[in-house]
Amino acid sequence: MKFIEESRIGSLPGSVLTAADVFSFKCHPGIGCFNKCCRNLNLFLYPYDVLRLRSCLGISSDQFIETYVDVILREGNHFPDVLLTMRDDDAMSCPFLSDSGCTVYPDRPGTCRMFPMEHGRMVTSNGKTGDTIYRFRPPEFCLGPREPDLLTVKEWLVGQDTETHNIMADDWADIKRRFVSDPWGAEGPGGPKAKMAFMATYNLDLFRSFVKNSSFLKRYKVSSGLVEKILRYDISLLEFGYEWVKLFVWGEKSSYIRLRKLTGRLSKQYGGIAKASSTPSLKALISPG
View 1 (cartoon, rainbow, N blue to C red):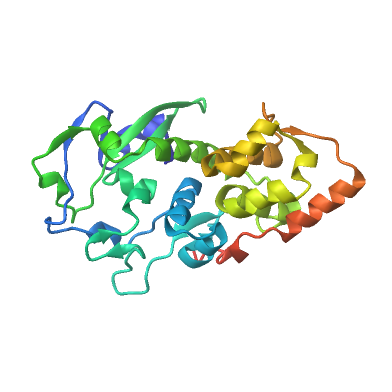
View 2 (spheres, helix red, strand yellow):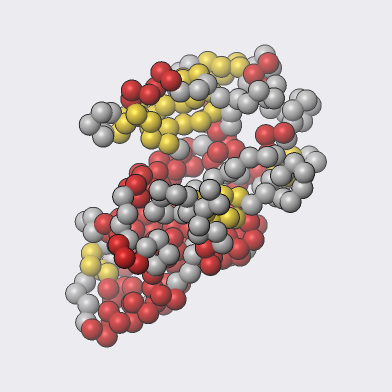
């Protein structure tokens, strides 16, 4: 999900559509390009994508990050991007691709659900976010648009079960665009504070353990009902993580997370936890360019 300046709408590649617009597309095993879109691509994963995939695979967040992703800090960015690591074959195939199709299809990433559609949010000249924008942008090799099936954008979104993915992607994009400016100061994007922010958004199992077993709930006032919810449900924990990052990194007030006054002992203990938290050893913290 991208934020798009209002003045650039007319210059965007592909066809800009509304939810009510009709387009022609169908993907199925009998089509000549089947699975070609699952090869030779840079697939960015948002936090909710990682949540769903690691649950589907039955592994921890740590295991998923170490096994299936590359964490890359691109020049001019102050928070790393997370990309799916492709197979080391000639086609750079998705690791979840089989001859019969996607092996994680019910939990596939939001980008895969939307394909060949992309969605973004319009940003006005005064910086306010506006309507959602959809772009129909199939690659040249894609034969899906030649199929006779007609459907509206809204029908496509419902059929691909995109609602929760798109909501969570919008919320993450709202946080990610704040990193245009450097919030880390002298410690930089590899420092303890940045690692904590990464943990709270991408490494949910570690974040849950941190909330439950560290001094977190002594430092922050959170209702008992919410604590029970975030310790039980992944999506609630991720939503909580988003909210906490805004408070922790930028000091933004939250209606349900409040900072308590720290004693010297708790402050020291909390700092030690921050240093111990990892961002999967940040496989590639420096961009290859």
